[in-house]
Amino acid sequence: MAQEVSEKQMKITARGVDVFYGEAQAIKQVDVDIEDHAVTAFIGPSGCGKSTFLRCLNRMNDTIDICRVTGDIRLDGNDIYDPSIDPVQLRAQVGMVFQKPNPFPKSIYDNVAYGPRIHGLTGSKSELDGLVEWALTRAGLWNEVKDRLDKPGTGLSGGQQQRLCIARAIAVQPTVILMDEPCSALDPIATATIEELIDELRTKFSIVIVTHSMQQAARVSQKTAFFHLGDLVEFGDTNDIFTAPQDERTQNYITGRIG
Ligand SMILES: Nc1ncnc2c1ncn2[C@@H]1O[C@H](COP(=O)(O)OP(=O)(O)O)[C@@H](O)[C@H]1O
Ligand SMILES: [Mg+2]
Image 1 (cartoon, rainbow, N blue to C red):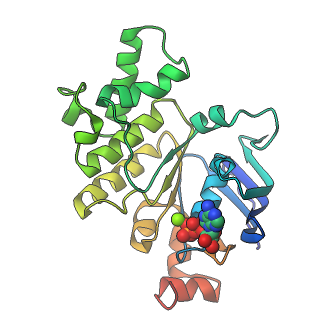
Image 2 (spheres, helix red, strand yellow):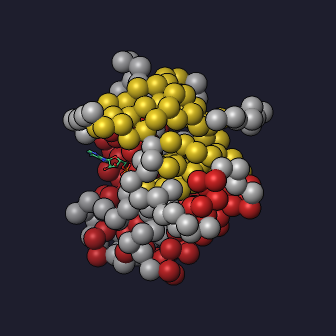
């Protein structure tokens, strides 16, 4: 795949990445650059490997026994599969938000305070309070929950729960946030709120979002990668991918002929 060399700062670079589940190959020789302060969307038909590749970026595939990842993936130039890397520390730097909101069965406050506590990020209670407020504010949830921080996170609406999960992810000060179909369990209004939030978050973070919605990819991302049967078929500016796709498979997908 031909790729332009860009002057822009790359947060993550992946080269020649293969992923296998047992004998079955799910990702084939993928090269991709993830920019800082931008939203990169992964699109493509169900089963093409979007989630599998996303999970390579913070070593979540390590938790799947039969899964094997090869190739080179770097965060700020450092090999994330180097034996010296602690996956738990890596996942604090490269946070993840899942399809179904999954708050802990704890208070709203403790959901957000959990990560900073285990990573020892704050010294005092007032420092932790400040960090919880910062993360909830950044996730666009503070005003809705500031008077009930001691109530269970699971009592919030679906959209609020997903924003709580975003607050939980950003509380440990990541630089990259991975989102795997973060709106697929949400109604259109909650989806619009999360999309606005994603646009706001990119001022501080590098964001990678898997979405089955091409409209969503077009609305929220600056870069789009189209996957098909484990291949990264096409990668470029979102506008170019949707208006002038180079590959016939991309054309077929965005016009609804495959998917
Ligand atoms: N835990 C797993 N064990 C075995 N095969 C898997 C596992 N997860 C995904 N796969 C397979 O890998 C391929 C890519 O799946 P996935 O990454 O979930 O695709 P997408 O997110 O694009 O829908 C599919 O063929 C899927 O069946
Ligand atoms: Mg998936």
